[in-house]
Length: 226
Ligand SMILES: Cc1cc2nc3c(=O)[nH]c(=O)nc-3n(C[C@H](O)[C@H](O)[C@H](O)COP(=O)(O)OP(=O)(O)OC[C@H]3O[C@@H](n4cnc5c(N)ncnc54)[C@H](O)[C@@H]3O)c2cc1C
Image (cartoon, rainbow, N blue to C red; front, side, top):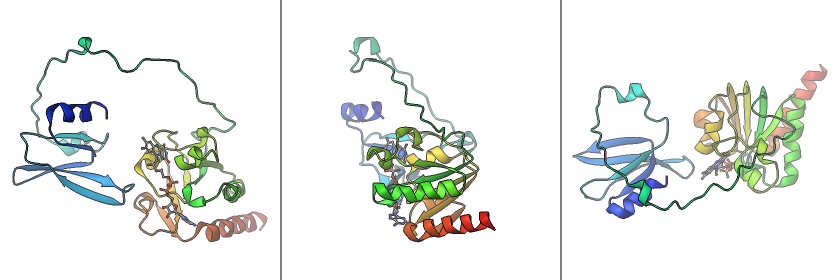
């Protein structure tokens, strides 16, 4: 992520980052990347230059997909020793462990930006409680300080492996979904039928969460009583 843009500037070669596929058409390279939180798959072509630079998202080219194809490796000296480091290690600060460990939870009720206001998070807590589950969240909820960082799922949060993951008002950006790859059944509630989360979810409810969450909670409490 740091090296490729620097190389692009130094060499003048075009760069496409975080690509998920590479194609060639009439001897020209094209790369596929996601835009708008994974809602759009864009095929990008490069300007006609002697080469191009592509960085690929980790895990998108498993060994079996590559098959017998071979690439030529070119080793070049890189005089790192001559470069002054732009960064220095300052200190290691351990994240607060918190009173719950979402990595151990069997059922997570995860809340995203669709919840709208901080006070609405109470709805999610009530549903989680009814289900004997634990609340987790997407990054915007932590960024707004509505829930603590140790409840965040995703690449800059935690990877979770519950049996059931209920995502409420979460669009399904890959940075979030990367943290759910070990989850069992994923259930999504989102009012946008085109939300990327529906590509991953096993079950989806396309509706307003403010209608669905209280309804689900009441049904679960009824079933518990009965
Ligand atoms: C380097 C980097 C690291 C990141 N790390 C993480 C990470 O670890 N975890 C993470 O989560 N994100 C992470 N992100 C952010 C990520 O890209 C997304 O921006 C984020 O996941 C979006 O969160 P969201 O789905 O809650 O919000 P949004 O994308 O805004 O989605 C809100 C969803 O709620 C739905 N909605 C709105 N109102 C309602 C309603 N009334 N009823 C039902 N649905 C409704 C909308 O249709 C929408 O799909 C990272 C980003 C970067 C650049």
